[in-house]
Structures are given as C-alpha cells and as structure tokens.
Amino acid sequence: MTASTTHDLTATVRPARADDIPGLVASSTGLFAEDAGTRDPSIDADWPRAHAAASFAAALEDPARLVLAVEYAGEVVGHLMGSLAEPTAVRPVKTATLISVYVRPARRSSRAGARLVEAFVRWAGEQGAEHAEVTAYAANTDAIRFYERNGFAPQSVTLRLGL
View 1 (cartoon, rainbow, N blue to C red):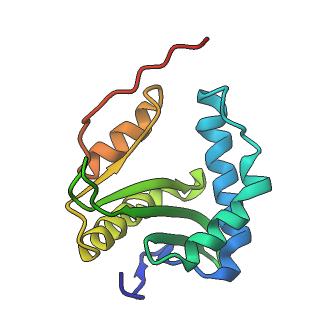
View 2 (view 1 turned 120 degrees about the vertical axis):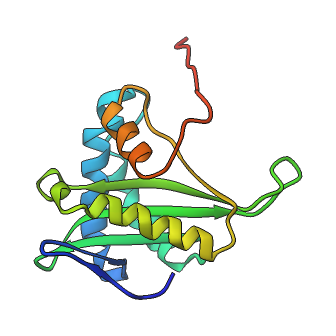
C-alpha cells in the first residue's frame, strides 16, 4: 500500500505510525467492549489493555501486516488490522485476512469504515492475495451487513457447543 491518505470532511484514513499506538489501543478496546466482550463470554474483553500495544507494535514492523488509523482532529478514532498468509499445500493461494476494524460510533457516518475496507482490499491485491476474508459474530448483524455492502459474501459458518 502506498503512503497516500484518503480524506473527507471529518476523518483521514492513513497508515498507522508508532505514535498512534495509544489511540489504536483505545480503538481496539472499543471494539472488544462493543463486539467480542458482549457476544462471546470466552473472550477476555480486557485483552486490549494488557496486550494490544505490543500486538500493534509488532504488526507495524511486519511487512505481512497492515495497520491503518482513522484520524479526526488529531486523534485516532478507528483502526484496521489485516494480515497476509502465504500459500500452503492445503490452501495454495495467498490470502488476506481482515483481523479487526473499528470506528468510534460518533465517526461512523464519515464512511471511514468503508474507506478502511477499500484500503485493505487494495493493499491485499497489491500484495498478490487472491482473496480476502473476514469473520464476524453471527449475532452481529450490523457487521455482517457492513461487510456484505463492502463486497464480502458468506462462505462458511462456525458452530459452537459449550461444554
């Protein structure tokens, strides 16, 4: 992905930098609180507070990872993290995975989420990925609709049995 930025009247989508890490952690904390923390009792909703800074720092140094920030008035108000997987014997194609995406509710009308996904898809293609994938909780119908509006289509379903 090039270092270009995408602007609108309210937000900028750009490659994240090391000095964005506190804002990225806050964004990840918002995602966990709003999504995984309310939909999956097996997820530690406090994980971002303890581990997200190291995770983002490592991702920023990894050429197989993409970290984007949404900036509004000098503050990080959203993020996207993606990764590449090289071909394997089982899956002989390069695959891009959208790991996480979040924009604070007050900034969602800026189309920043859609612009994050567009930048991710563009990056994936530039890296030679043959397809991109994302997972969402089945109960998160808003996220599923968002991903479908942005070109993703259902492929598999994960069923879980609590023991």
